[in-house]
Image (cartoon, rainbow, N blue to C red):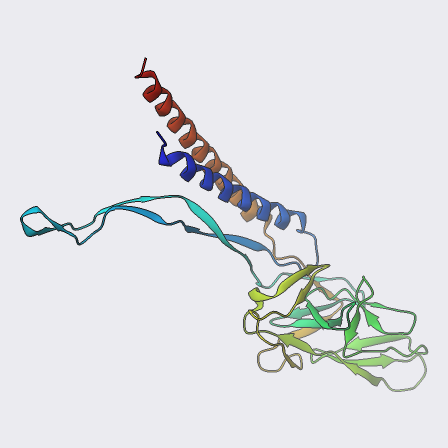
Length: 263
């Protein structure tokens, strides 16, 4: 004899394991600049219909609700939440934060454009702004070697500053990209995302214009992971895992009782 609760509870335990995996990754990246937390979403599985609602009973009566038994739950998605992270002032001229919607565009290994919210940029040997992994910010921004520093305006205009009486000169323009469905982007690691069919095509524009956030130099966007929320979710998942394990134990004890009746 098979008891439905065994497989149903097992699916519930697997669901909670997936939740813990997502929470662990969120907590591991609590100090990762520009990181966006994920959430595990679930759906119930197919139902076994013993008696369908609305069927005709004896004496032409109609069954109002019927009899259905659920078979558990399954993971449907690990949704990335692109809410704004808090901005931290760093006083590092290479740190640029996006306040609002948008992504920085960088050039990947293959030459394709990929996207990031991590604005921790550095100057390479050619004076170009690059990520910590060496990926080039696009459109390219090059700081002249004789410049003493550079400024980035809210609108993304980059100006080189000189020690002499030479006025600041525009040397580049930071542009942003946004997507109809940013949750559909494919995560690549290193805080990078790739465009996908689900995300839609990248729309580019100037910071501060309609639909795009402004940029703030010498600020860095922190992770949007809230430790207290993740710990609460972890406790909830642990308790749900335990109660599903208890369901398996109860079903096992019932089987033992049924097997004992044969003696």
